[in-house]
Image (cartoon, rainbow, N blue to C red; front, side, top):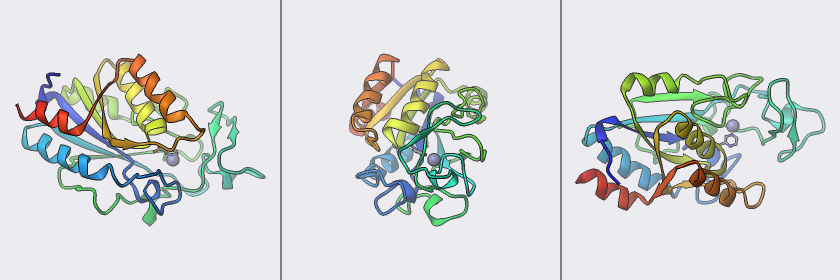
Length: 220
Ligand code: VGL
Ligand code: ZN
């Protein structure tokens, strides 16, 4: 795998307290991905690559929170004005709360851009590129184009939601897309969704590689 580092963007997705052990929407071993991400972001920036981080950043009473709706519990699905089949979650990543902060172990020094998504009270956004109506842009596409990026490397949480939608959208935008296997972890709700999402990403041309193998390619 050859990578032109100066056209490469590392996208660090939702490495926030609420998605890590002890958080409101904790992903199993969600904090284990931080070491590999820190190594990658350091090496990439040292070699002329670029790093952006994404934060899930919801207002209180967000449409994706079960608590916003009458008689709904997390895991249920609803049709909203804008989205058919929106999954409902526990309250998480509420703007300005500790749960929405980056995990303390994430090295934020190499991060140039921080993009917040899911800020519209009436519309969720799993993807870093397009919100859940699948047409409202977060602005990341414009940044990527402006910077002349042709490759995105993706790590973070969660494999079957924000990683999945971000990776599929990146492919749709014509970008070479690499998901780092030890730099992602999944919710796996419903059961089997991690496996299913990986199969779909592969079918869309997303590449999967371990951080150690990727680092070898970057350094040479
Ligand atoms: C996510 C569910 C709800 C994610 C965000 O980061 O994958 N999942 N909001
Ligand atoms: Zn969310």
